Amino acid sequence: MKIRKAVFPVAGFGTRMLPATKAIPKEMITLVDKPLIQYAVEEAVEAGIEEIIFITGRFKRAIEDHFDKSIELEIALKESKKEKEYEILSKISEMCDFITVRQKEQKGLGHAIYCARDVLGKDPFVVILPDDIISYKESVTGQLIKKFEEFGSPVLAITEVPAEETYKYGIVDIEKKMDERTFKLKGMVEKPKSNPPSNYAIIGRYVLTYDVLKAIEECDTNQGEIQLTDAIRKVTKDQSSYGYLYDGLRFDCGNKIGYLDATIHFALNRDDLKDDFTKILKKYC
Image 1 (cartoon, helix red, strand yellow):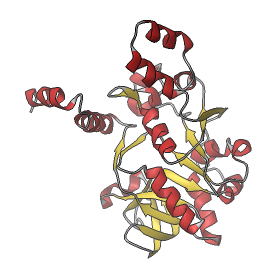
Image 2 (image 1 turned 60 degrees about the horizontal axis):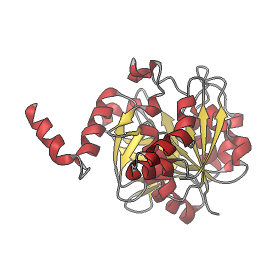
Image 3 (image 1 turned 180 degrees about the horizontal axis):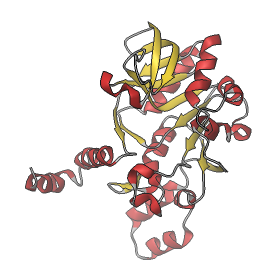
Image 4 (image 1 turned 90 degrees about the vertical axis):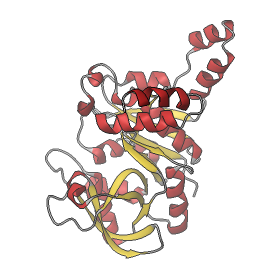
C-alpha cells in the first residue's frame, strides 16, 4: 500500500529557542532562507507524500499561512518582474495537500499523533518531527518507506549516540541485526536514566501503522503525557518493528547549538553562498 500521509506535530512552545519563539513558531525560524519546517516538508514530498497533516496549537497560524497561497505577494512579484522569486513562492503551496488539526491540550507526542486519527483512517503513515533537520542524498523518509514496503511493519529512524547521551532520547532494544542498517527490535525505552538497552536513539522520522494508533488509545499517561514510544512498544510485543540506521546528517534545530551547526552546514552547501560565507567564517576562526 502506498504511503500518502505524513503527520507533523507542531503544537509545542519551543522553549529551548526562547526568546525567538515568544511570537514566532519555532518551526518558522529561518534556516538560511527557508523556515525549518519547509525542509522537512520537502523531504516528505520527495518521498512521495501527498498529504501533510499539521497538528497545531494556539499561535501557530504562521505555519498554515506559509503553505497557503499568497495572491497579493505573487501578483506583486510578477508586476516587479521578479520571476525567480515568484516561481519559488508559488511552488510552496503546490507541493502537496495541507490539512490542519488542532491539539487543544499538549499531552505528549502520542496524543498529538492520535489527534490525526480521523484523517489517517486505517492507512499506514509517516510521522516527522521538524526539529530534526537532515541533510541527505536520498530523503530519509523515503529510505524508511522502502523498508516499510519490505517488512510491512513499523520502521523507526535510528542513529548511534554516545553512551553518556542516551538519557536524552528514546533508545531501542535490539533483537537482531537484519542487515548493515536494519535492526529488528524487541522494545524501546524513553530517556533511560540508567542501563540503556543500546546506544541507538530514535530520531524524528517514523513509518507507523494503524495498530500504533490503536495502541496510543490504550496507553496510560506518564506525568500527564501519552508517549509514542509506549504505543510502539505495545505493538512490538505482538508484531515486528524495525529500526533503520538512516543515511544522512541530522541536526537538532530545537536547540541553539544544533541550529547554528545546521546554518553553517546548509550555507556552505549552497553554491550561491558558500564562497562569501567562507570568507565571513574565516574572519572569526
